[in-house]
Every structure is written in C-alpha cells, then in structure tokens.
Length: 183
Image (cartoon, rainbow, N blue to C red; front, side, top):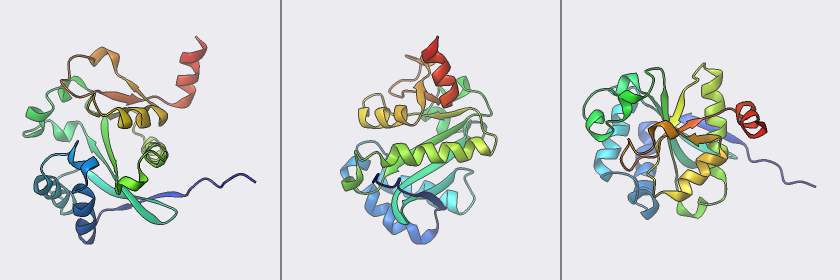
C-alpha cells in the first residue's frame, strides 16, 4: 500500500508566531542565508501590522508547523532599502511576485517538504491569477536551488550574471516544461 501524500496547508503569520519564527531563525540553516535576526523579525512584524505588503505564512504538513513562506510583489518593492539590496528587481515585470521559503527546524531538511510546500503555494498563487512567479536564492544555496527546480522553477538565463549572488528563477508550469523537453 502506497504511503499517503502529506497534507500541505498554509496559515497567515500572526504575532504569536514570532517566538517560533525567532527559534527557527536562530538555527544555522537560517543564519547562513537570512539577514540579521532582529531586522528579519522586524520585517515580519511590519508585514503582520500592514506596513509591508508582503504576505507571510506558516506552512504546515499534516497540521504541524514546518516552515515559513511568503510572497511579495515586484511593483511594491521598487523602493529603498530593497532596490539597494536587489538592484535587479527593475529588470522584472511589475506584475511579478516573488516567493521566499525556509524550513523551520533542521530535522525537516532534505525530506522534500520545501518542494511540496512550494508546489502547493505556487498552485494557489496561479489560481489567484499570478503568472510571473519568481524565487531568488543565493547561487551557493544548492539545496534550495534543487528544491526550487523540483517545484517547477527554472533559471532565468537572460538575467544570469546580472544579479550578483542571486540566482533568479521563474516558475514554469508543468505543461510548458513538458513541451520544452519534447522539442
């Protein structure tokens, strides 16, 4: 009998999640790729309180909190400090949305949970009408790049070499990927 697929769900981040997020962000696999802990938590507070249009969520697997995921619109981020940190953003369409994801506890790394959560999240964004969905890992974050490729993201070759340490990847629906393989 096949093992059932885990149930992935998303819930908005609320203030009571901040202590859990702090404990996740303190872990080495977060520290390596995220900025200053207090700054990052401050950004999440701004999101929760509506000062930032980024939409933060906790993703759950079979009802358990497993990680953090968010989406943001390019058009809303074409301001400082984001332009200084990501000067490649104006190269993207204004209607693009960016997605960020991190697994909470290190014990859940390399189990395919991030790829599955990202696939479900992108499917919900697609249903909402978003067609330009990007993700922007560091080139050196090979684990993340592999996970994003499994979730349907492909490197934006036209921007390769123009984005510093960032590897820009765009979601490509399965039907389009299948056509690319066939040709």
